[in-house]
Length: 138
Image (cartoon, rainbow, N blue to C red):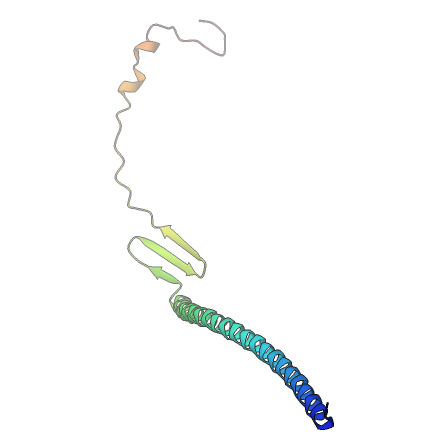
């Protein structure tokens, strides 16, 4: 074989080896980039899910804050109102956490007069002789 042909074959083989190595390197690089892309997609989906959870919690917290503010306002109103209110039927004593209702006594009706004169004349006592406790005689 010709020396020039041997050199060309050697160069061709070396070029093929270099291209194979380069292709393997590119394939490895492409696989690595694909893995990185998959990781980035998963992280993006996870971030999207966390963002939705954050928005839901934020909305819930805003509703709770509104309710808290309303309760604070109501509590302040209850603390600032008079503690003793006198009305026709009852007296209210208001404190935070406790309410006492004291009823006023109603007017008494006139007592019914009971005729006791006939109640002492029962037939039960008419037949028994009187007993004297001091002498023990009947």
